[in-house]
Every structure is written in C-alpha cells, then in structure tokens.
Image 1 (cartoon, rainbow, N blue to C red):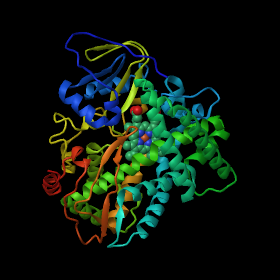
Image 2: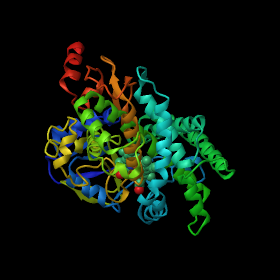
Image 3: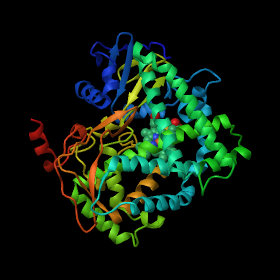
Image 4: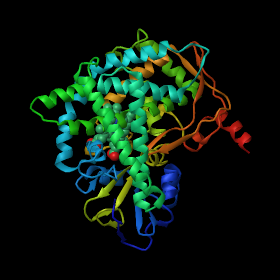
Length: 478
Ligand code: HEM
C-alpha cells in the first residue's frame, strides 16, 4: 500500500483544492475538467494527508512522460506477496521501471515491430469478415457489445492463437473483473477508505483464478491447440532461444497484453462508429475514399496506406473520445514540477482527455471534425492517445492496423443508423473511457447514409454532437 505523499508549494497561490479523492475515482473526467478550468495547467486535489497532483499541459506532460527515472510507473498499487498469483499477474511492463523495463521492451520489440504486421493483417481480415457476414441489413444490434465480443475474439487470436470464443470470453471476464478490482483497491489504498480494504482478499483470489486460466492457455498452446501466427508463440520461441523468459514472466506479459489490448481497441471502435453515424457528411466523404482506394471488400495492406481521410477520422475519434483517458506516475525522488515541489512517493496524473480538449490546442475541441487534421501537427505531448515517451503503447502499430482494417471492412459492407432517443452513456472505468450502455443501431446498406438523430445520456458531457443530436435531447431532459 502506498505511504502518505507530501508536497510543498513554492507560493501560497498554489492550485490546491481540498476535498475527497473519491470525487476523482467516481467521475475522473468531470473532476479533471473542473480542476483544469479552475486552476489551469496544474492542480492538486488534497484529502487529509493524501494528495493527487494533476498535469494538463503538453509541457508538463512532456516532463512527466519523458523522465521515466523520476516519474515511475506504479500501475498496480497492490503487487501481492512474493510468491502470490497477484505478484505474477502484475509483473508485466506496467510494473517495471528502469533497466528491467527497458530490457523487457527490447524483448517484446520484434513481435510488435512494423515488419510483423503483415502476418497479423490476415487474421484481422478473416475475423472481421466473419463478424460482418453474421450481420444482416435491417436488423438491430448493440454496437458496444458487438465490439467488445469482437475484440475479445480478435485479441485472443492475435495474442494467443486461440479461436475459442468461450475461452476468450471467460478470459476477458476474468481480466476485466480483476482489472476493475485492482483499481478499486488501489484507490482504496490512496484514500484509506475501509470499504475498499474488504476488496483486497477478493483481489488476491481473482488473481489466482486468472493465473490458472492463463496457464491453462499455455498448456493448450504447448499441446498444439492453437492456430496461425500469434504473439505468445513468438514469445515462447524467443524464450526457448537466447532470451530466457520464464513461465512466470510469460504470465505477467500475457495478462498485461490482453488487458491493455482488448477494451481499449473495442472502445475505439464503438466511439468511432457512433461518431461516424452521427456525422453522415463525414461518413459520406470516408465512403468516397474507401470506394476510390479499396478495390474489394477486404483491403490489402498496401491499400490501407492511401486512406488519409480514414486516418484523420480515427485520429479525431481518439482525440475527442480517447479510450485511455488518463494515467498515473509516482515520483521516485523529490522533483520540481511547474510551480510545485513534490516529494518522493507523490502520485502524478496526466490526462489524454483533458489535453485533447484544450481550446488553445484544438479549435472547438469538443467537436468531432476530422478535417482539422489537414492542417494540424501537434507535438507528441499535445496529442497522446497511445501515451508518449519511453512507455508509449507498445501495441500502437498493431492497434492501428486492427482499427484501419476492420473499420474498412465494416464500412464497405454496412452503415449504422443510431436508434433515435436511445441513451448512450460513457464513463471512465479503471482508466478507460468507454460506453457504459448499449449503443443501439440498425444496420443499413452502404447505399444509404444514416441521419443524425437525437440521443440522450452522458455522451453529451463528453463530446459536442451536432445540433440535431443535442437539441431535442436537451428539451426532453428539461
Ligand atoms: C486503441 C487501442 C489502444 C490504446 C488507446 C492504448 C493506449 C495505451 C496507452 C495510453 C499506454 C501508455 C500508458 C501510460 O503511459 O501509463 C499504453 C501502454 C501499453 N499498451 Fe496500449 N493501447 C491500445 C492498444 C494496445 C494493444 C493492442 C496492445 C498489445 C497487444 C497494447 C499493449 C500495451 C502495453 C504492453 C503497454 C505498456 C507499455 C509500457 O509500460 O512500456 N496496447 N497503451
């Protein structure tokens, strides 16, 4: 558990707000938006002896993200005892720092390198083809659950070579439940809330169940029950070669990779499809690009290179509704950050959502406007959906191929009409911003463009949708 943290302030006008840290864990985006609008680039939320420090500007993001010696990762507040499952399942990259982190990144480099991507492209095409063949024009679906199921299957195939939907779902459930519990217990440790301490035992138990399933998957692997190119096989091969990776280490890698990959990508798909469906003029322009540059329904890898408007759409979707909404570091030694002096052990939070919604960086920042990317080239610390610096997402190139390829196939076959007056809620769970309600839609043929329809829900507090989506919804709410 983390010790109380300390900070001293250079001046009395320091941006400190006194209040419960639970307001942050309950609704991180609302809390950070408020702190940013009240205090600017830097803020401190203080609850008795505990403080969270927030940075919201590209320059402070740069300092926090580029200096990994001082601003260290402590993603899992609870590591468990030395020989526990919790220790092993949390032993992946996010718990590592310094030379250990650098060496692990090096050992994972090849399986995520650009040259490995063509091998994954075929699997992505096959699974998206199967998904879209199960859809029918005129029928209804919940885009959120479709994308979550789809990415469970895709992630399990790409990472582990498993095409076993039941197993993928079970693993996904175990990982999501465990990730959520980690977050609760971590926050509980920070705010010393007694109700969270109860969650500790169940966290350890969930880690044991999870480790058991991961090892079961290793056995399937070793007995040849897997299919096609996959990341685990490549890691096992390198473990058998000159780089030694033990099974205990593989447990940590496998858990982290699955947890980091499936929901982030699923949320990005859901948000992008929702935004496109509510902005038909953007969809129309994208359709024209896909018709011009992609000959069949399944894009070849080199065809994806020419889809500049698709890239702008994805970039804009990940700006306005970033699946990774914030992340945290902990100071390893005393350091000056802006006008604060922080002692060792202080948690520092940076936020993609807040940085991406700064009006000084992005004109009308709450609006979805892919056209802005024609004339925009922000620094890596002003636009950071995959993070930045030495801990930048190692799976970003793979995620981008998944998103480009699968979106192209989906949109070559269907458009989506969002159900009028349906409710779309979005919320941060753990650190991920995703839909927390169904996204009800009807499948249209691509000869028909969807219309913007009024919808309700907390989506309106996250992104400014077109008038037609908002006005009636607000009238109804009133
Ligand atoms: C749209 C999809 C994705 C998004 C938005 C995303 C976002 C991020 C972000 C923001 C970070 C940095 C966190 C920090 O600095 O604290 C990160 C790290 C990471 N991501 Fe992703 N990610 C995505 C997909 C993936 C995929 C597909 C994989 C693997 C197959 C993956 C594996 C990882 C790993 C292992 C790390 C830790 C890197 C380190 O600490 O060195 N991610 N991701």
